[in-house]
Length: 313
Image 1 (cartoon, rainbow, N blue to C red):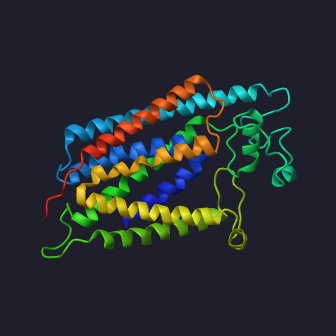
Image 2 (cartoon, rainbow, N blue to C red):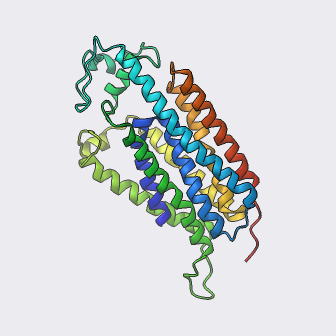
């Protein structure tokens, strides 16, 4: 159940981080940090069944990807500042009051889709996105977003070792003769706690929101199904992914099963191709982004190659 709590909190934090640093960097850094910490813990919990000479070079590659992700975020933030500075004649931005934005697209026009013709990656596009989303990031510190990402990664690093402990009882908390939990039983309790955290925290944040989000109520939430089908689909995919990860971890070692963290490669594709992240950025940003993704691919390959069969108890 502790694993479900850790994953639930990590997911919620990462959703706030997306607004500050983008989908690609958030998932790369948080997943890499989860692997660096979680894989190391799982390696020792699993009795070192994975090949250390292959596993830990992969962990080092993940750590490098974390630093490259931070560099990508910093470089892209400078690119956006440069784009916005070119609009300084028409736009007045305040560093401490996020909603002081002049000449933003008219709200009614935005809702009617009349201002959707801005070129992706331009200053107008950045302003339009800021106007639409509930979490305002103009004037916020760059370190805030990175701090949220690191916190999310720390939470993500705990859920896999928690399931490992639940199914293999390395700390010998069970009495002699008591069978260990199966992966499926552990996954059930994991899902129950994950659901409880999701409902409880979101209900609390609905009335006491953070990051400048306006407060709401249960009635308004229940009546607004805009985008809710995507959230339900995301939950189903997350559940299936976690279940397969736990089954793979029980068979070949949880350290190698952390290769499931290849998910940021897919999310980066979504962020860059579909959502226009890093569009019209500098060559430096593109170079750092390419290096980050390359290092991540290499790291995943190392983790997969380190897999070994678990000996029967």
